[in-house]
Length: 188
Image (cartoon, rainbow, N blue to C red):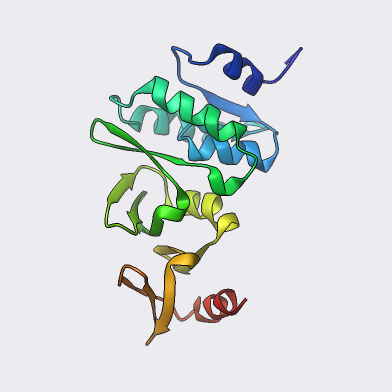
């Protein structure tokens, strides 16, 4: 865009009365800000099946989410210089929550949905896949311990008989295929 980027335009607007699907060849950090804020993006060159999936996700999003609050969190995430300070935008019912990844203990797959569990016992359901969350959270300390489970390494207290045990006492199975990878990640 002449004179700036789409991010610059949205920051100047402050809020906008429309939904946004970014088409970008931009750096990973900007993509993280978009992902964490529950906005959608497509990498250039845009593939027709990816565009169709983004439009489907748009139609599945909860209609009662407060667009202005979500937009403000996106702008806040965009201004952060540290990925650890980003907040996930999670909508449950008619409420929108902004959750720090450090608050999450683990995430589990439920078909094409993901259950996100916090260390204080809250649970959120997201229309994003576990793979989406792995892409977002692995760079900041999350570890895939099973095909259906992603764990915050900072929440793991120990391994016990093929399971990771978390600070909140949750016991999550480690698949045989992931066992060596988990041991290495926890030792390092």
